[in-house]
Length: 366
Image (cartoon, rainbow, N blue to C red; front, side, top):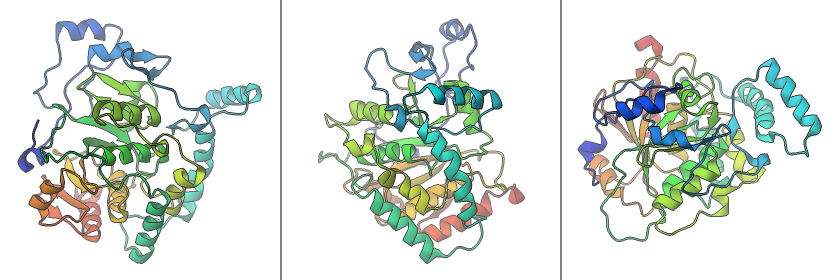
C-alpha cells in the first residue's frame, strides 16, 4: 500500500476486539472484528487466530520457529514483584544454574540509581550541551546499528503493510532499542505505544493481551502474531520485511557496554512517566520522523515516552525510501521532525519539540 503524506498524518486507530475470556475465540468467529471502526486506545486488535500462539505465557508461532533468548539475556519484566513472587524467585535462585533473571535484577538496582543521578523534572530548562553530548556518546555505543536503511532497492515507493504494526516499549530499555534499530534498518513504520514505569494506559494493554509486563511487545495485526522477546521480534521483522537479509548479531545480542551504556549515559531518560503528564491520550497520534541512532531524535523519543504519548514512527535512516516524505513535509532531510495533527503543529528543532510537548501535554493544560 502506497502512503501519501496526508494518509501518514491521519489518525491510525486500533481495531476493536474483546479482551480475553474463556469464550473469546468463539465470539470472534461469530462476530469478527471490524477493521474500519475506530477504537479508543484502551484496546488492541487481536484476532482469534492469534490465540493459538500462546504457549507457557509467551507468544510463539506454530508456522515459523522463533528461538528463545538466552535466559541471561531475556527482555525486561519491569513490574514491581509481589512478596510471593520474591519468595518464588529466591527459591528458584537457590536451585538455578546461575542464569536467573539477571536483566530484571540489574534493572531493579539500576533504576533507583538512575533516578538519583537524573536531571530531575524533564520539563525544566536543560543543559543542552550536556544533553547532546551524552546522547551522542549513546549513539557511539550503538554506532554500527540503527543509522541506515539496508534496502538496496531503487524503487522509492513505500509499501507498508495494510494495517500498521504496534510496538509497546520504553525508550530506556536496551532490548526495545534493538527492535527500534531493526525498524530503522528495515525502513519500517510502526505505531509506538510508550510504556514508561508508572504507565497509566499502555502497560495495562500489554498485561491484558500478553499476560505480563515485559518489553518490547509487538502486535502485527496483518499476520495475527503477537510476541515478546527482542530477539524473536527482530528475527520476525527480518523474515517478513528483510528481503532475504538476516539480522546482525548486534541486533540479537549485546554486551553490557553496547546494551546498557546508552541507558546509563542518558541517566534513565525515557524510563519513567512524568508525574505531571496528561492522563488522557490525544484524539490522534503524533507522527515522528526519526532514526534510532540520531542523538537529537533520541531526546525527543524520551520525552514522548515520559509523556506516554502514542505516535507513528517513520524510520528515516540513511538511504530510506521515506526521505521524500520527510522532504515534502519539512523541506529538508533533517531529523527529528514532528507533526501533531491535533494542533496542526509541525516542528523540526529538537529543543522546540521538547518545549512544545511538555507545554501542550501537561496535565495543567488539559
